Amino acid sequence: MANKPFNAFKLAQDQFDSVAEQLGLDQATKDLLRNPDREYHFNIPVRMDDGTVKVFKGFRVQHNDARGPCKGGIRFHPQETVDTVRALAMWMTWKCSVVDIPLGGGKGGVICDPHNLSMREQEGICRGWVRQIARNVGPVQDVPAPDVMTSGQHMVWIMDEYEKIHGGKFPGFITGKPVGIGGSLGRTEATGYGVIYVLREALREMGIDIKSTRAAFQGFGNVSQYAVKLYKEYGGTPVCVSCWDQEDQKSYTFSKKQGIDIDALLNITDRFGGIDKKQAQAAGYEILPGDAWIEQEADILIPAALENQVTGETAPKIHKNVKIMVEGANGPTTIEADKVLKERGIFIIPDFLANAGGVMCSYFEQVQCNMNYFWPKDEVLGKLDAKMTDAYLKVSGLARKKKIYMRDAAYMIAIQRVAESCKMRGWV
Ligand code: NAD
Image (cartoon, rainbow, N blue to C red; front, side, top):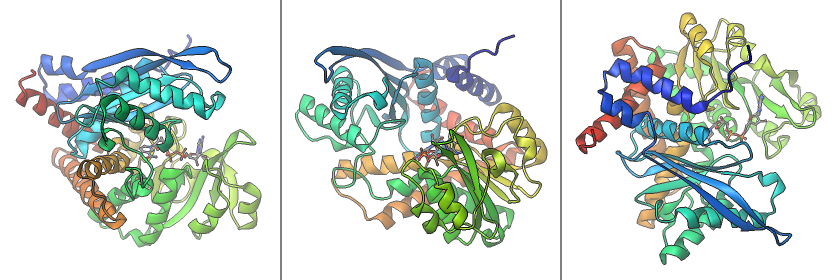
């Protein structure tokens, strides 16, 4: 029998249904929260470089705004589907809620492939996207951000068009902007550092000295590079990272038992997080197959590359020393792997808690824009640490109290807070 195609929205709804049942939510609250509040589908006509007009399909999904304006990225992807955008919008609601920032969940997308579009054409898509939705997004309604294949440049075009439409300056309408034009210091580090702040707290609770630990990382992009850096600064030993090799079209693990030299490794890494094999070999790295990161002798695993990596097939290969897994990536662990991890008693810090540093810093960017006053980097990172630590302690406290899995505890806190806000507003 052919495998059913993966539907992210179905998965998001199943996860919600299971926690809603455990929380005993009433039917109206369940009906409200298992579907988006609003969604917009629109055409974006763009005059292409060759003079023809091409019509692109755009979306914005606003899952829930009971706790504050919706927040979430805009993705440019040729295989974008509205169900993926719906799922991602719902996960944003839970992510903002679990770290207790006053925002709801949203996500947007355009079906397009930026590899085949000039910068002028991409600018046309950005300006066209916001022209279609300008009345339904804004600093007090819905605040977009960069995501897959969109960058700070795209955000500035979108902001510029929005400001032309509304006649004024509204930098708090969109985040992920470059520093100097409304961006926040610390955003580049935020997700990776956030991963290590929560790891530090978990180790402290377990009575393990971070200096005695070894960690294996999957990926060496934005999240992983800063996670490795801070973990090393705290005295831990990162034993390997892995990355995708564009030339060979497969991934490799770069291992050094005595620990990675992060600055030297960054010097031989391209802007997509790909490491030069020859130079790595010369620098004493053992180059292993892509999956080998999971088998390394380590106390901590940090998947920070992409989804579906810790599976029913790979999870049994996890080294017996591993005590903690911190999910830097979104959705790195399958349901089958979760069962293996539970049985082995490996402590999980789930993705929407562990990697929330990015959205937290986006929230700080919005706050700074609204005040028109920008904080120094140390202040941003200090606030990030305090909020991430607080969120972690609430989730681990509930997991201990109810003797439940960390992922379930995180979902319970997140969903409960949103459900209560809906109730207090009189929506259900
Ligand atoms: P990135 O594109 O900067 O880096 C990805 C890294 O993973 C690269 O080193 C790449 O070579 C590697 N990689 C890709 N395929 C691989 C494979 N099959 N095996 C091993 N390595 C592979 O991405 P990023 O921004 O670091 O994001 C990583 C993950 O974290 C994604 O799941 C993303 O959704 C999630 N995330 C990122 C942020 C953020 O602020 N950047 C925030 C929240 C969640």
